[in-house]
Image (tube, rainbow over all chains, first blue to last red; front, side, top):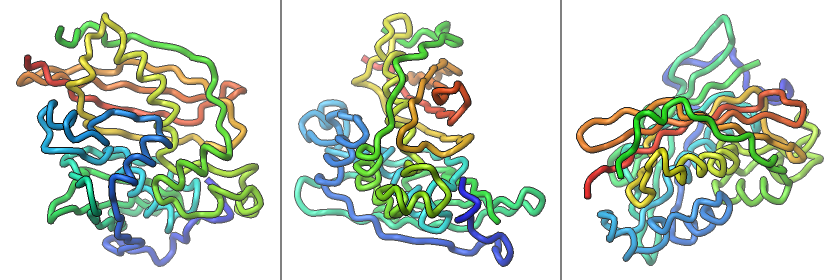
Length: 143
Length: 148
């Protein structure tokens, strides 16, 4: 956490959207994430393998989705200022072999702690009309 | 072989420290669309009050997953990795991860619950710096299908 860049607490209101972004996902995105993270599970790049384990096809890494969601929170919170971030992976994002899909990330103030001057930011990631993360919550200390 | 619920409480590590580099932080930031210059440029990071470039929030998974791998391959635990789905993840930071950190990780099997043919295996990875001070706790749950 950096005191220099913490978001301002005063003026925050529960329900306020602090950041939003459309995340574009293609197979390139997944290969890049696999390399950067070291998660080379073939369900994230090989359709035949994904289908052999009962998936409809290649799906995005849950951790890619969570990472992209964190980036949206950081855009508001500042780099290094997210103290806690959790999520459940409730639905996969199917990613076609060609072309791209779009997920919409919205970061909303979910709760405020006046004593600690922290904000709980609830993050929604919507894909194909449904939420793909459950209980995605970030804790951000504020100035 | 099904997951062995008696594996709860097992610990692994600490392993050889993970050296956090500027190049890896930038590569990870690019991969998750973390756009801040503080992930890429030490001068920007210093202006924000950090000693070096700062890692994105979920970067700790790179370090934690290497440690969690020891759980997955432990025959006494009995996880079939081809039947694993990631169920949840949580990062709790004592301080951000910075380039130059040497991170030692110890991983614990926190909880195993079994119902309806699925084992939920929760691990807790404790990341500490070269001084032994805590940096982050990474909690992760894998859902393992026990069907044939």
